[in-house]
Amino acid sequence: MRIRRNKTTLLTAVGAALLLGLTACAPAGSAGPGGVDDSGDAPATGDGPYNLEIAESPEFEEGTTMAELAEAGTLRVGTKFDQPLFGLQGPDGNPVGFDVAIAALVAAELGIPFENIEWSEAISSVRESFLETDQVDIVVATYTINDARKERIGFAGPYFEAGQSILVAAGNPEGIEGPEDVEGLPVCSVEGSTPAATIADEYGAELLAAGAYSDCLDPLRNGQVVAVTTDNVILSGFVDQNPGEFELVGDTFTEEPYGIGVPLGDDAFRTFINDVLEEAYEDGTWARLFEETAGVVLDTPEPPAVDRY
Image 1 (cartoon, rainbow, N blue to C red):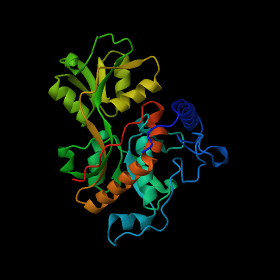
Image 2: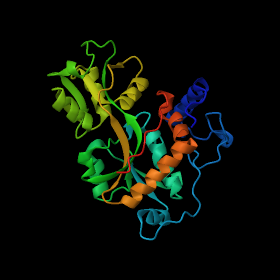
Image 3: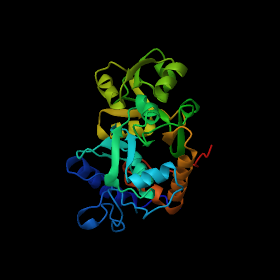
Protein backbone atom coordinates (compact mmCIF):
# COMPACT_ATOMS: atom_id res chain seq x y z
CA MET A 1 0.00 0.00 0.00
CA ARG A 2 1.32 3.44 -0.87
CA ILE A 3 1.78 5.58 2.21
CA ARG A 4 3.62 8.72 1.21
CA ARG A 5 4.36 10.81 -1.83
CA ASN A 6 7.07 13.42 -2.13
CA LYS A 7 6.25 15.39 1.04
CA THR A 8 7.87 18.65 0.02
CA THR A 9 6.02 18.78 -3.24
CA LEU A 10 2.82 17.75 -1.61
CA LEU A 11 3.04 20.27 1.23
CA THR A 12 3.66 23.09 -1.16
CA ALA A 13 0.89 22.09 -3.49
CA VAL A 14 -1.68 21.30 -0.86
CA GLY A 15 -0.79 24.36 1.15
CA ALA A 16 -1.61 26.37 -1.92
CA ALA A 17 -4.85 24.48 -2.25
CA LEU A 18 -5.75 25.22 1.37
CA LEU A 19 -4.92 28.87 0.94
CA LEU A 20 -7.08 28.98 -2.14
CA GLY A 21 -9.87 27.31 -0.19
CA LEU A 22 -9.69 29.91 2.56
CA THR A 23 -9.39 32.92 0.35
CA ALA A 24 -11.31 32.05 -2.76
CA CYS A 25 -13.78 29.26 -3.25
CA ALA A 26 -12.08 25.91 -3.66
CA PRO A 27 -11.33 23.63 -0.71
CA ALA A 28 -8.19 21.61 -0.08
CA GLY A 29 -7.25 19.08 -2.68
CA SER A 30 -9.57 20.60 -5.22
CA ALA A 31 -9.04 20.55 -8.91
CA GLY A 32 -7.32 23.64 -10.11
CA PRO A 33 -7.77 25.47 -13.38
CA GLY A 34 -8.00 23.12 -16.30
CA GLY A 35 -9.15 20.24 -14.14
CA VAL A 36 -5.67 19.39 -12.86
CA ASP A 37 -5.36 18.43 -9.21
CA ASP A 38 -3.50 21.07 -7.17
CA SER A 39 -1.23 18.38 -5.73
CA GLY A 40 0.43 18.13 -9.10
CA ASP A 41 -0.26 14.42 -9.41
CA ALA A 42 -2.72 12.76 -11.71
CA PRO A 43 -5.16 14.89 -13.68
CA ALA A 44 -8.39 15.44 -11.83
CA THR A 45 -10.92 13.12 -13.35
CA GLY A 46 -13.19 12.53 -10.40
CA ASP A 47 -16.03 14.41 -8.79
CA GLY A 48 -15.87 17.34 -6.41
CA PRO A 49 -12.94 18.77 -4.45
CA TYR A 50 -11.56 15.31 -3.63
CA ASN A 51 -11.68 13.89 -7.15
CA LEU A 52 -13.68 10.80 -6.25
CA GLU A 53 -15.18 8.50 -8.82
CA ILE A 54 -18.95 8.38 -8.50
CA ALA A 55 -20.48 4.91 -8.63
CA GLU A 56 -22.75 4.59 -11.65
CA SER A 57 -26.21 3.23 -10.87
CA PRO A 58 -25.13 1.21 -7.82
CA GLU A 59 -27.52 -1.57 -6.88
CA PHE A 60 -28.51 -2.27 -3.29
CA GLU A 61 -31.02 -4.56 -1.65
CA GLU A 62 -34.47 -3.02 -1.62
CA GLY A 63 -35.41 -1.40 1.66
CA THR A 64 -31.86 -0.78 2.84
CA THR A 65 -30.57 2.63 3.77
CA MET A 66 -28.14 2.42 0.87
CA ALA A 67 -30.97 1.87 -1.62
CA GLU A 68 -32.97 4.76 -0.16
CA LEU A 69 -30.03 7.15 -0.24
CA ALA A 70 -28.98 6.16 -3.74
CA GLU A 71 -32.52 6.70 -5.00
CA ALA A 72 -32.79 10.06 -3.20
CA GLY A 73 -29.42 11.15 -4.59
CA THR A 74 -28.63 13.07 -1.42
CA LEU A 75 -26.60 12.32 1.69
CA ARG A 76 -27.06 14.36 4.88
CA VAL A 77 -23.80 14.59 6.82
CA GLY A 78 -23.08 15.97 10.26
CA THR A 79 -19.53 17.22 10.72
CA LYS A 80 -17.52 19.85 12.57
CA PHE A 81 -17.20 23.34 11.12
CA ASP A 82 -14.41 24.64 13.37
CA GLN A 83 -11.65 22.06 13.24
CA PRO A 84 -8.75 22.78 10.90
CA LEU A 85 -7.49 19.73 8.99
CA PHE A 86 -10.62 17.63 9.65
CA GLY A 87 -13.72 19.81 9.35
CA LEU A 88 -13.47 23.55 8.79
CA GLN A 89 -16.16 25.58 7.08
CA GLY A 90 -14.92 27.30 3.95
CA PRO A 91 -16.08 30.60 2.49
CA ASP A 92 -18.51 28.83 0.16
CA GLY A 93 -20.28 27.27 3.16
CA ASN A 94 -18.96 23.76 2.56
CA PRO A 95 -16.57 22.32 5.14
CA VAL A 96 -13.13 21.01 4.14
CA GLY A 97 -10.82 18.47 5.73
CA PHE A 98 -10.25 14.75 6.21
CA ASP A 99 -13.65 14.08 7.80
CA VAL A 100 -15.28 15.84 4.87
CA ALA A 101 -13.28 13.77 2.39
CA ILE A 102 -14.29 10.54 4.14
CA ALA A 103 -17.95 11.56 4.00
CA ALA A 104 -17.55 12.40 0.31
CA LEU A 105 -16.04 8.92 -0.22
CA VAL A 106 -19.13 7.26 1.27
CA ALA A 107 -21.39 9.46 -0.83
CA ALA A 108 -19.46 8.63 -4.00
CA GLU A 109 -19.93 4.89 -3.43
CA LEU A 110 -23.67 5.54 -3.10
CA GLY A 111 -23.62 7.32 -6.46
CA ILE A 112 -24.04 10.74 -4.85
CA PRO A 113 -21.86 13.65 -6.08
CA PHE A 114 -20.25 16.09 -3.67
CA GLU A 115 -22.60 18.90 -4.63
CA ASN A 116 -25.56 16.82 -3.43
CA ILE A 117 -24.23 16.36 0.10
CA GLU A 118 -26.13 18.37 2.68
CA TRP A 119 -23.79 19.47 5.48
CA SER A 120 -24.88 20.20 9.04
CA GLU A 121 -22.65 21.42 11.83
CA ALA A 122 -22.49 18.65 14.40
CA ILE A 123 -20.79 19.92 17.54
CA SER A 124 -19.80 17.24 20.03
CA SER A 125 -22.86 17.51 22.25
CA VAL A 126 -25.41 16.95 19.46
CA ARG A 127 -23.85 14.15 17.40
CA GLU A 128 -25.89 11.30 18.89
CA SER A 129 -29.14 13.28 18.91
CA PHE A 130 -28.70 14.25 15.26
CA LEU A 131 -28.73 10.55 14.35
CA GLU A 132 -31.48 9.63 16.81
CA THR A 133 -33.82 12.31 15.46
CA ASP A 134 -33.03 11.64 11.78
CA GLN A 135 -31.49 15.05 11.17
CA VAL A 136 -28.52 13.46 9.38
CA ASP A 137 -27.75 10.12 7.72
CA ILE A 138 -24.18 9.85 9.02
CA VAL A 139 -21.88 11.76 11.35
CA VAL A 140 -18.21 12.14 10.45
CA ALA A 141 -16.88 14.54 13.06
CA THR A 142 -13.67 13.46 14.86
CA TYR A 143 -16.05 11.06 16.59
CA THR A 144 -14.43 8.66 19.03
CA ILE A 145 -15.92 5.17 19.13
CA ASN A 146 -16.74 4.11 22.67
CA ASP A 147 -19.09 1.69 24.41
CA ALA A 148 -21.34 4.37 25.90
CA ARG A 149 -22.04 5.87 22.49
CA LYS A 150 -22.65 2.42 21.01
CA GLU A 151 -25.71 2.20 23.23
CA ARG A 152 -27.28 5.07 21.28
CA ILE A 153 -25.82 4.82 17.76
CA GLY A 154 -23.80 2.53 15.51
CA PHE A 155 -20.23 3.07 14.33
CA ALA A 156 -18.47 2.11 11.13
CA GLY A 157 -14.69 2.22 11.12
CA PRO A 158 -12.48 3.37 12.68
CA TYR A 159 -10.97 5.31 9.80
CA PHE A 160 -8.34 7.13 11.93
CA GLU A 161 -6.61 6.73 15.32
CA ALA A 162 -5.99 9.91 17.29
CA GLY A 163 -4.91 10.47 20.90
CA GLN A 164 -5.73 13.05 23.55
CA SER A 165 -3.10 15.72 24.12
CA ILE A 166 -2.65 19.12 25.79
CA LEU A 167 -2.37 22.56 24.21
CA VAL A 168 -0.80 25.43 26.15
CA ALA A 169 0.25 28.98 25.43
CA ALA A 170 3.52 29.34 23.53
CA GLY A 171 6.47 29.07 25.90
CA ASN A 172 4.44 26.87 28.28
CA PRO A 173 4.30 29.46 31.10
CA GLU A 174 2.79 26.97 33.58
CA GLY A 175 5.42 24.30 32.89
CA ILE A 176 2.83 21.66 32.05
CA GLU A 177 4.34 18.43 30.74
CA GLY A 178 1.37 16.09 30.85
CA PRO A 179 -2.14 15.51 32.21
CA GLU A 180 -0.79 14.86 35.73
CA ASP A 181 0.25 18.52 35.90
CA VAL A 182 -3.26 19.99 35.50
CA GLU A 183 -4.87 18.58 38.65
CA GLY A 184 -6.89 21.36 40.28
CA LEU A 185 -6.14 23.77 37.45
CA PRO A 186 -8.64 25.21 34.93
CA VAL A 187 -8.61 23.39 31.59
CA CYS A 188 -10.95 23.91 28.65
CA SER A 189 -12.56 21.21 26.56
CA VAL A 190 -15.92 20.64 24.88
CA GLU A 191 -19.00 19.76 26.85
CA GLY A 192 -20.03 16.13 26.39
CA SER A 193 -16.75 15.09 24.80
CA THR A 194 -14.59 12.14 25.80
CA PRO A 195 -11.52 14.38 26.41
CA ALA A 196 -13.51 16.59 28.79
CA ALA A 197 -14.55 13.59 30.87
CA THR A 198 -11.04 12.16 30.88
CA ILE A 199 -9.24 15.31 32.00
CA ALA A 200 -11.79 16.02 34.75
CA ASP A 201 -12.55 12.52 36.01
CA GLU A 202 -9.16 10.84 35.66
CA TYR A 203 -6.78 13.76 36.14
CA GLY A 204 -8.75 16.10 38.41
CA ALA A 205 -8.68 19.21 36.26
CA GLU A 206 -11.17 22.01 36.85
CA LEU A 207 -13.12 21.80 33.61
CA LEU A 208 -14.27 24.82 31.64
CA ALA A 209 -16.82 23.28 29.28
CA ALA A 210 -17.13 25.07 25.94
CA GLY A 211 -19.52 24.55 23.06
CA ALA A 212 -16.76 24.06 20.51
CA TYR A 213 -13.00 23.58 20.71
CA SER A 214 -12.36 26.89 18.99
CA ASP A 215 -14.22 28.52 21.91
CA CYS A 216 -11.36 27.37 24.17
CA LEU A 217 -8.71 29.43 22.42
CA ASP A 218 -9.59 32.85 23.81
CA PRO A 219 -9.77 31.54 27.42
CA LEU A 220 -6.27 30.15 26.88
CA ARG A 221 -5.06 33.42 25.38
CA ASN A 222 -6.38 35.51 28.29
CA GLY A 223 -5.26 33.11 31.03
CA GLN A 224 -8.72 31.99 32.08
CA VAL A 225 -7.48 28.42 31.61
CA VAL A 226 -3.97 27.00 31.65
CA ALA A 227 -4.57 24.47 28.89
CA VAL A 228 -6.94 23.11 26.27
CA THR A 229 -7.31 19.39 25.79
CA THR A 230 -8.73 17.18 23.08
CA ASP A 231 -7.35 14.95 20.36
CA ASN A 232 -3.87 15.71 19.09
CA VAL A 233 -4.99 16.14 15.49
CA ILE A 234 -7.48 18.86 16.42
CA LEU A 235 -4.94 20.70 18.54
CA SER A 236 -2.34 20.40 15.78
CA GLY A 237 -4.74 22.24 13.52
CA PHE A 238 -5.02 25.11 15.98
CA VAL A 239 -1.22 25.33 16.30
CA ASP A 240 -0.93 25.43 12.53
CA GLN A 241 -3.69 28.01 12.21
CA ASN A 242 -2.29 30.33 14.92
CA PRO A 243 1.48 30.40 14.46
CA GLY A 244 3.45 31.52 17.49
CA GLU A 245 0.50 31.45 19.88
CA PHE A 246 0.22 27.84 21.10
CA GLU A 247 2.18 24.61 21.46
CA LEU A 248 1.49 20.97 22.23
CA VAL A 249 3.14 19.46 25.29
CA GLY A 250 3.78 15.87 26.31
CA ASP A 251 2.71 12.66 24.63
CA THR A 252 -0.79 11.53 23.78
CA PHE A 253 -2.39 9.75 26.73
CA THR A 254 -5.48 8.07 25.26
CA GLU A 255 -6.45 6.13 22.14
CA GLU A 256 -9.22 7.78 20.15
CA PRO A 257 -10.48 5.68 17.24
CA TYR A 258 -12.56 7.89 14.94
CA GLY A 259 -15.69 6.24 13.57
CA ILE A 260 -18.57 7.14 11.28
CA GLY A 261 -21.81 7.39 13.22
CA VAL A 262 -24.96 5.78 11.80
CA PRO A 263 -28.40 5.14 13.31
CA LEU A 264 -28.46 2.41 15.94
CA GLY A 265 -29.28 -1.04 14.56
CA ASP A 266 -28.59 -0.26 10.90
CA ASP A 267 -26.03 -3.05 10.58
CA ALA A 268 -26.32 -3.30 6.81
CA PHE A 269 -25.37 0.36 6.48
CA ARG A 270 -22.43 -0.10 8.85
CA THR A 271 -21.24 -3.10 6.85
CA PHE A 272 -21.47 -1.14 3.60
CA ILE A 273 -19.41 1.75 5.00
CA ASN A 274 -16.84 -0.65 6.45
CA ASP A 275 -16.48 -2.23 3.03
CA VAL A 276 -15.98 1.21 1.49
CA LEU A 277 -13.27 2.06 4.02
CA GLU A 278 -11.38 -1.20 3.56
CA GLU A 279 -11.42 -0.82 -0.21
CA ALA A 280 -10.07 2.73 0.17
CA TYR A 281 -7.31 1.41 2.44
CA GLU A 282 -6.30 -1.16 -0.16
CA ASP A 283 -6.39 0.97 -3.30
CA GLY A 284 -4.62 3.99 -1.77
CA THR A 285 -7.62 6.34 -1.83
CA TRP A 286 -7.61 6.70 1.97
CA ALA A 287 -3.93 7.72 1.97
CA ARG A 288 -4.50 10.19 -0.88
CA LEU A 289 -7.41 11.83 0.92
CA PHE A 290 -5.40 12.12 4.13
CA GLU A 291 -2.39 13.63 2.37
CA GLU A 292 -4.58 16.19 0.63
CA THR A 293 -6.19 17.31 3.90
CA ALA A 294 -4.75 16.59 7.38
CA GLY A 295 -1.51 15.46 5.77
CA VAL A 296 -0.62 19.11 5.19
CA VAL A 297 0.51 19.10 8.82
CA LEU A 298 0.53 15.48 10.00
CA ASP A 299 2.45 12.47 8.72
CA THR A 300 0.29 9.90 7.01
CA PRO A 301 -0.18 6.90 9.30
CA GLU A 302 -1.16 3.35 8.49
CA PRO A 303 -4.95 3.12 8.34
CA PRO A 304 -6.52 1.44 11.36
CA ALA A 305 -8.18 -1.95 11.15
CA VAL A 306 -11.93 -1.76 10.79
CA ASP A 307 -13.80 -3.12 13.82
CA ARG A 308 -16.79 -5.12 12.57
CA TYR A 309 -18.37 -5.55 15.97
